[in-house]
Amino acid sequence: MAATFECSVVTPEAEVYRGQVSYVVVPAHDGEIGFAPGRAPILLQVGAGSLRMTDESGSQKTLAVSGGFAQMSASGLTVLADSAEKPAASA
Image 1 (cartoon, rainbow, N blue to C red):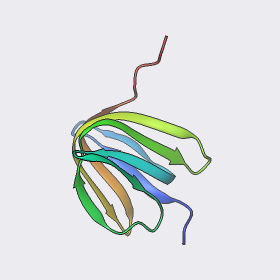
Image 2: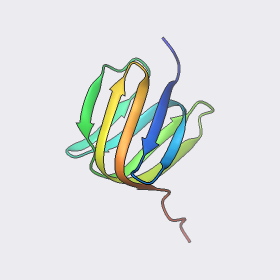
Image 3: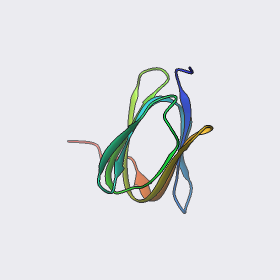
Image 4: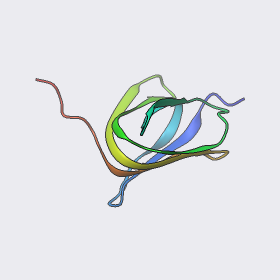
């Protein structure tokens, strides 16, 4: 089994993220769901919240997302979000 999988986050305006990840947590409309390599295929409605990704180097990346759909398939995870942006930095 592969240790990473392809993750893509796309909005109507642009592709916000694409890369190899080892784990992703997506805010679904009814709670959070985690994705790891080898996860069974699923299609879900995205809610509002933090999409958290762990990349292949172990670094954490977070995007604030709202609405849309996410699909896990054999080729990876695709998140089609109504909006996605990096959260504002804390003071």
